[in-house]
Image 1 (cartoon, rainbow, N blue to C red):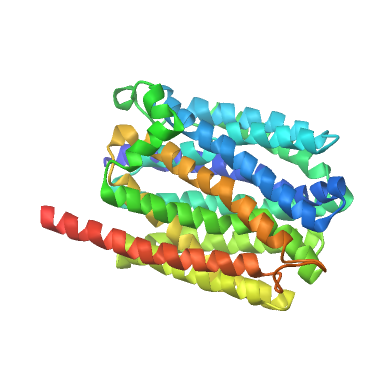
Image 2 (cartoon, rainbow, N blue to C red):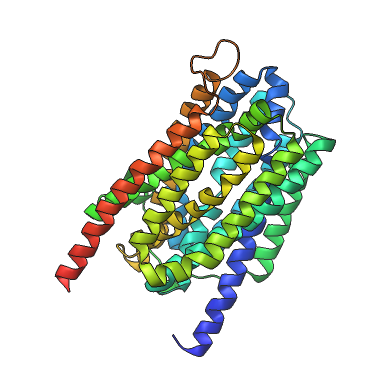
Length: 413
């Protein structure tokens, strides 16, 4: 890469990281208060767990339907317009949820958010456009760090605003999405040149058509399975964490916001500073497995922690979970052409969305029957223990799949 191209790439990376951070910051603000607002509407902590899981699943279902379309559109028209449309849609969505009079309006807000939250798909495709294959794990780690930075300030600010009013964070989120749009409109450059674009096709853009790409290579299919299990386990946080923390430890919205901010700081450090050097020394496969195993250990400790202090300490091993996602993404991008990166990210997002549909419903139901006087399970942390077992299964599958890919590559060479 020439010095001029390298400088341009660094500038583009900075632009996409800031845009992604602002987008996630607006999402993170509402995390501490949305379950609380649902509980106000339902009047029951256990029922709020089910409804919150349903809302997360609804958002994920819309992601599943829309992500392949978004990825394919970005392959034809470029990444920049997709990102800008996404931020405008999110701004409108947060205004809608800020004035929502009942659960039905909140549900409509989650539908709009699911359709317009395209930054996850396009940000990874953008990074694939501007980085060489051997540097993509580090690039994806930087995106993860930007997302984490948004989650540092977002939940903390949301927790503070939530102490004043459960609707205030939604207005703040709408404002931040508007800022993200203005920033992107003024400074975000296009990353996909005309000669690398691919015409839009409904055959590739529908969810099942996009998933066919993941079946084009045995290792790609296996890595997609690992990705599914990772997303499945991760949704235990979006489904039950806020309610669980309030029920078991008596934490307020502000305390939950502080803890989520701490999680974001740790994740930012891991993905921003540790992924690149770790992959350079040990390779994608070993780093991926390490991340999955530490994630399993940390989330098991969270489910078993009898006090809030021990739960907080469990965040330390759990933070190394952040090693897994960038390395999975890197391994997958190396198995498709440059013109298919947007389609791949759309397919990946669809995999995550499928997990996002079934996982919150599952963990929400598990939580609902784990708390209260009529609990079926005697332990309120059961959902976290199940998520830990899922991550261990992902580690076993990931080891076998990535090892087989390495052997195949060595034989071909």
